[in-house]
Length: 228
Ligand code: B12
Ligand code: SF4
Ligand code: SF4
Image (cartoon, rainbow, N blue to C red):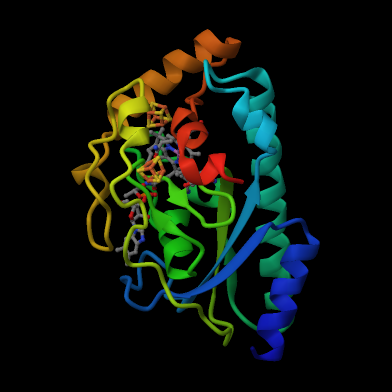
């Protein structure tokens, strides 16, 4: 690994990242990646017990961690991008302010999950979530786009869900079709974001009086979460 790759990874772990991966983005159209060739994905995990306690409904505690991890990620990617800029490279932190939350059409120009599979962090599960070997889908993620000459990982192009259908059966919205993801399969061909958004909103209200779209049942039931 070259010196800059080691340095940036170390800096991000020091900022609290639980996983860091670097991916080659050049197979994607230049306009979605700001013409940057490289994407860095960072992940932070939820405490296991917080996820165990959302098996009935999402909790206020889960919502607090959701906000806490979001803030942590925004800070982390901003910091990482600043370090790269100091070294003379271009870097864009994909903070929530920068990319939005897909409120209008459930889409952002370059989703963090796309950067994550390119960075070898994990695959897209039947749930449409990013699933990792280390923490399952029990993580929140963010990303940095850059032109720095960093060493990139082997991407995930296929799912490791196999015959498992647990999230398909557990989703209270019926949003998960059960079709297996591979690179190139568009989200809406196996997952219904409209059904998920509607049900997650209802469950937030019921669980802790929230107005947001928090549910997470698909995180809680995944065997890759359970085995952590
Ligand atoms: C809009 C949005 C939603 C929408 C739509 C969900 C969706 N899956 O798209 C709604 C409101 C329904 C939603 C719900 C939830 N969300 Co949400 N959401 C987002 C947001 C803001 C944008 C996602 C987006 O642009 N989607 C567009 C579609 C096309 O892309 P995608 O679903 O992200 O994934 C596709 C691509 O990545 C593609 N892909 C992967 N690799 C490659 C490689 C190549 C070359 C190509 C071309 C494509 C490609 O394959 C995927 C499937 O098609 C992201 C944050 C972000 N900025 O990325 C969070 C995010 C996806 N949400 C997250 C979470 C956790 C949730 C909820 C559990 C809510 C909660 N916290 O309780 C549910 C779970 C829903 C589910 N099962 O997916 C996490 C997921 C973490 C993880 N482990 O994957 C994210 C990443 C937020 C974060 N910062 O961590 N969400
Ligand atoms: S967040 Fe809830 S409603 Fe949405 S896909 Fe997961 S289990 Fe289904
Ligand atoms: S519950 Fe099973 S099918 Fe769903 S994402 Fe996890 S491993 Fe894949």
